[in-house]
Image (cartoon, rainbow, N blue to C red; front, side):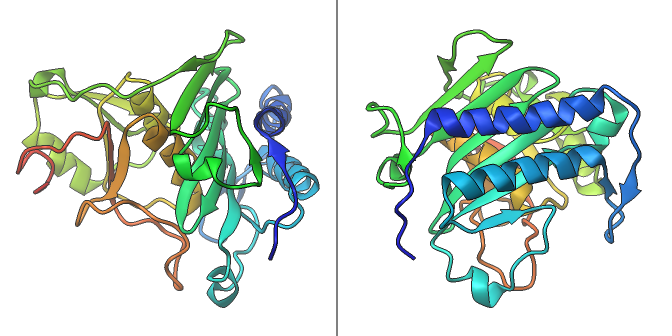
Length: 287
């Protein structure tokens, strides 16, 4: 389908901020928690942010399909024809939202040819906004990016300050200096085993897609995810991390994590997010 819409970066950032504001309105008052069919939690904030994003994207880019955590996924026969589409998680880290620890995000990604080429991640309770694009995004007529957008770029904006560009840091030579991020709400036996094999590293638990953004901002080094995630959990932050010079690769073969490739599931394989450095053999499960 030809795409005639052109949307500015600022409009997309504003839309994600609006979704975050919807979340915070509910966050600041008592709210009920329901369970979805897979037993994951659902709140009014998930739905409010979903409607905000879907309605906003529908106005800005009516030609593009939207895949959201909070809508039934289109059948693969239909999805496989999507060259470009929006992939969103209106409230990533619902468990963190319920626990009121602030570690939840709004995730908005543009997927093109199975790769997340543009992403915005917003943590409204922390007032932290991250965004980035790959060089391929600058070639899409859909996005009206800054004139300097011919190469990959990533940015961070905190607490109303001016945005600043971000880049990953080199992996420290000593394992004792590694900062390894882990999921706050989703531990796994495989991760525990990996931790016992790397006892010198510094481990920090953190919720939502903030983990990938912290690596992008040179505030951490590794995020081994040895458990289930869904495609909407990772796409936006993967775009930010790759734009900052990092990578998100499948654990089993170190090939880049890609999207909308499998008919049976929208679940990601295990993966590793890092600053792009190749680890020596044995440091990361046989890398």
